[in-house]
Length: 251
Image 1 (cartoon, rainbow, N blue to C red):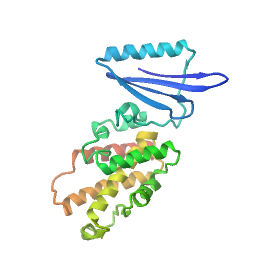
Image 2: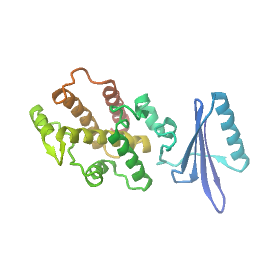
Image 3: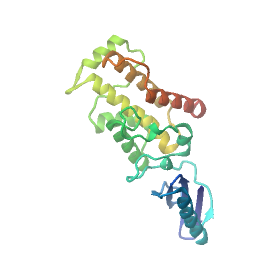
Image 4: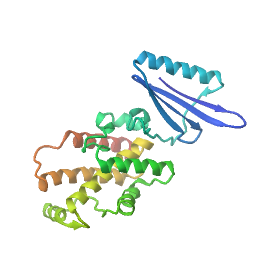
């Protein structure tokens, strides 16, 4: 079930949205043209969830709300209570990034699972709420200005020996491999995060940078940390899904 309603009179112009998924539904409401507020409710069964959703819908229609559409550019934000969730993700994100890894807040390899990746995504949400999110620039600003890290984006032309040498360098008490890994986790989180919030990517270069970060992590695993083996399921899934999104949505 997915219903979007709108109510207008001489004093107000507001929207109300409800969407069910299994035993949960999300409510999204507020002034039309804003992202509004989000709330998720869960129930013991799908029939009970659907029943309660229908009751709320009927109540809104009775009050004079009419069916409508959300404006283009509508943004999606997670709730503090439920965290990462499909119902608070842009439909375009759900279309291309359907695997459970995109809602994993625990595994280091998931785009939002590491401490740095999760913190970066939360910062990006705040920037979007303030209307000041230029995702590609945001990466460097977050790392340098807010976190005090050295910005070390991946370099495809960097040789294996250069990478190993950089990994051993000291950056204010942190080794280069730690700085590079944090950079890569932030880049990946911001790239996927922008799509999760807005359904699009504002700069193709950010997607390319994220793919390069995935490659650099694999090189660090192999050359510096001694982890042999094939590309992980997480990395392979993210790479596949992001490349498909780029081909069909970014060009």
